[in-house]
Image 1 (spheres, rainbow, N blue to C red):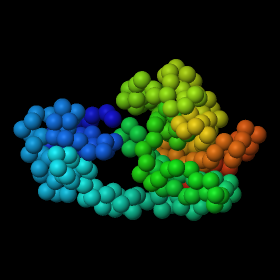
Image 2: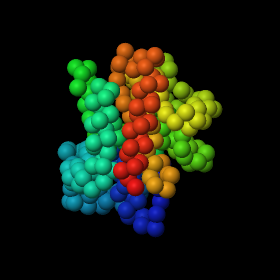
Image 3: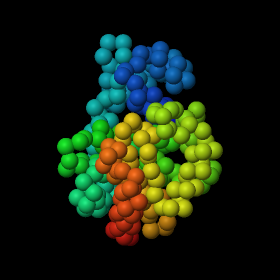
Image 4: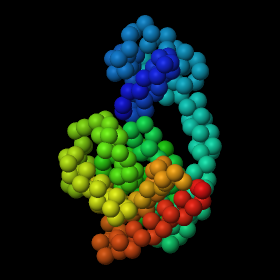
Length: 251
């Protein structure tokens, strides 16, 4: 994840520690100060303070993200109006398609699911609210990127280089990905053809604010036979309709 520096260095360090631990099953003091790039002395006092405030939990010689972050995260989601506004739109989309529906936003350099509505069918797509996604292999990530400036895309992708291959269909070179982003912008929707997870497909569209800026994306996901090639265009039309409806509700 890209390191961001502000005029408040102490806060920057707290965020860097949280980011470092976010994708690890705990880390030792040495692993943290080396991974985050801070001095031993300042790392020691910072970790102690974060444990005191409940931002971290210490178990033996390892540190983990604390439950205070979970509590604050839940409050943040509650206060994020777009999630509430999108609920009826996603519910109608799920009922019409019988597919799992997601709403996601870009958080830092990663897309993240804000909400998920499960498909009524027996087949379950493994995802959850708060799940971080890959930019280059997820439909939702590509749907957001396609409407960003070339400079913003380059900045985001710099954190993902080299592009990780997850399946045989994952795009792993930037020029090919940029060609696909141009196509996505032209037709209005993004497609994950089993690029992020084998056997799972996804169609996603951007969500714009009234000023025309992309602020989120919505998607439908299912296993390959639920999104067959001959129904892809029809499903994409329905998802685009949902995106337009959500824009209307945001005005």
